[in-house]
View 1: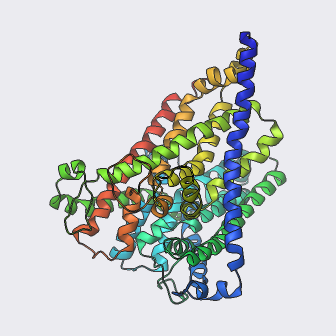
View 2: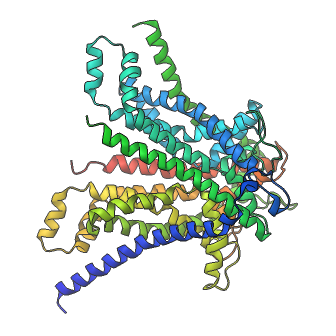
View 3: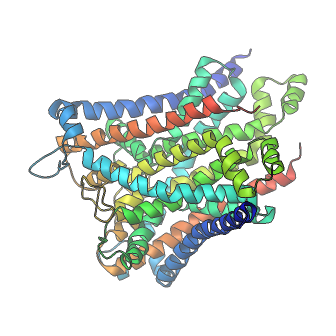
Length: 285
Length: 291
């Protein structure tokens, strides 16, 4: 065998290995989804969605869990988005290259890499204890807001960067101030991009369990929260709790709750992808 | 400038500066929780004792078993994710037709969007029983199964960052390699991967940092038994799992047991902070070598 044929065979072999590696990822993903749907789908009915948790698996439902998740979604959006978008606008539109701005950038990159459970410790000490908010929805939402803030800031900046300078220059030439330009020209032009990033950040927040456990969200909440000061649970914590029980029936409940959680996660991601594609098609600078 | 303009700029500035407060807050919380802890437990004991039993009557405060558990699950995850992720990156760059690349990348990204509690459920109820068919000594809770699942979860992280790094290598290098008669494989691993090595290393470091901080997969499937071992078949406990375990229990606020989670947290923070900054440093030092 010549060197050339040997190298060709190696090349071909790697090609097959490449396909194999792709398949590992895809088969794993497929197996996970099929397993969860076959185990949990039969459990999902109206009662499951509208029942309170119970000691008996067959009577347990996820009403408090998804109500908590919905509350967290809304509160986290209300806190994280104005803050994150404002910070993104400041860093992209207002700062010059100063020491402070490069320090802010490094700091935000660092925050993005801090494990979520550390944010839980921060929330526990600052919101639950120092500010006395207790293990409430508000504490949980504030904690998750800090967690996703770096993502919101970074994606806002990316979206603002995509708006060409000519738009700003045109606005300034007509006598608009900095803020008028930002508010009336730059932000509307980058709205789609910002929204995409913001929704992706939310889908991250929806799946988080660890920081909320540390903050003190409970596995068993016998009522639907009615104000931000109420105690709460969320879908990921309910899933974690059911997965930790020894009885097999609770695993079926967990699978059913996972279907609901994946539905919300995929829905949010789907909206984000749709918005991004539409944005890319519509605007040609 | 008008007053209202100035006012708005100040508001925006405040929003940006809050990010600094978050960092200060994290460091303050970790320090104020762990300084009282280290007044009662010596740092030397903390770093050298081989047992971690703060919740037992006979208390030992050696962090090593938790570090070993974290190291073990992370090592398994990287052993899975690095070869597969890098192969996928090379394959998509050098071999795959454009259409396949466009369809496969978003599907792989789905792996990164699934909540980690779902992976934990899958590791415990499917992957562990599956592995027990081949490995008879495998315990119901172990480091192997969550390690593998975590590895598959971070494949897209390594593959997409590495692919970006490989595709930003100048085309001339690739063409020169082909011109010399190299096969695609030789071009990929002798020219492209070495040229993109800094970007690939950055992707691996970020993946390690992610695996070190990962919580729910190991909390569900790796067990809650701090053990100084590198045996992947027995239950272990990671730093993150310990924090979850204490949070779920009813340890009184302000007690020594309560403060252990801040001591554990500061160790975790130092690890991930170090890894992240190492990756920034490499990125900055080796970036744009070809421009």
